[in-house]
Image 1: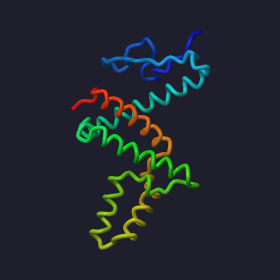
Image 2 (image 1 turned 180 degrees about the vertical axis):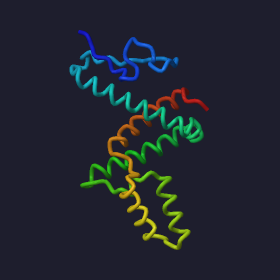
Image 3 (image 1 turned 90 degrees about the vertical axis):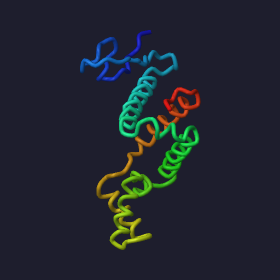
Image 4 (image 1 turned 120 degrees about the horizontal axis):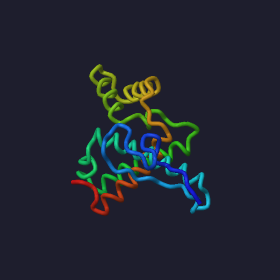
Length: 163
């Protein structure tokens, strides 16, 4: 049975990188061996999206944000993501402050404090900024991040994560 390639449009199966760069290409093949070829293909596409997110975040943060805390740090980050998912699932809609990027929330609250706005008033203002600016993590991104932290944990546990 022939399968469909899930290497993504940027890296079609069997072709060199379009931008002339060098690198390794790993293709996932949806061959139906699970019993559902279409589901295999969608799973592979989700993994590719996760890989692109992983690369972008590593370009921003580097590996030390993980290696400095080890498995404990990965578990804490994974727990944060799982708690967010639980809130999504158990509420009618997500609370924008809960999914506001932490650094933006802290900056907004600190700015409020500088102007004498503190406590619940600062939190309410950060909530409004989250709603107005769209600085919220999409629900689907939280699932991708959860998967990525699982892979990162695997790499750390097996000594494959750089120091």
